[in-house]
Length: 261
Ligand SMILES: C[S@@+](CC[C@H](N)C(=O)[O-])C[C@H]1O[C@@H](n2cnc3c(N)ncnc32)[C@H](O)[C@@H]1O
Image (cartoon, rainbow, N blue to C red; front, side, top):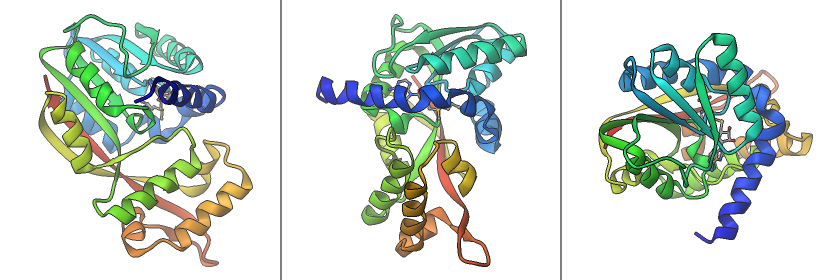
């Protein structure tokens, strides 16, 4: 990956998330859900373990790890997000160290964590393979990765269209993968996948576009793309419309993974 393309992606994420940081801390879909419960149950943080939450966003995983007694470092490329995490940690009365860093260049020594988590973020990374290689490096032998992100359908055409739908709403979306794609990247980094499960996440369309301040033209185009979705895309996103036929909700499908170094 050319460094220029990588730095463009990092800048796009900062630009996108900086002004919207509070919205992600307050987002009920990020603060809770069956996906978060499953991720935490699989990672099973223990008192005194060293945990790293990458692309921490509003810090909901980081806070849960800290509540369980782990010593938590939260990393994000967007300084405004780290300020939100620090505020949330203070409000919750748990200690969390915050570090500004990019997922593909973690400023930590080899083997320095028992747990690494990364939830609903890797589709933004300029180079997901480089991120998983960094996870394998910073995890101690036997350490756990708890990973979650949105997935694409296995079929080529539908996969391209679903990814494009997500990218139109948020231009800092780089690339998601199918379940098989994510698992391949994780295994190729030398991590062993122990558990993997798809979890649906329901989205109210207005809230989903509102969290990214989508312009009316973008909202209209998203509606058009969904209305014209071929069967594979429609089956994957399961759109729900009101009596007038306007899109009100859909789901995306998240992969939750436990892998071991
Ligand atoms: C949707 S939010 C993360 C949600 C959060 N992990 C949670 O569970 O609620 C995506 C985050 O990824 C961060 N991000 C995007 N690209 C990144 C990168 N290359 N390295 C580190 N963080 C990145 C953004 O700044 C943003 O805070």
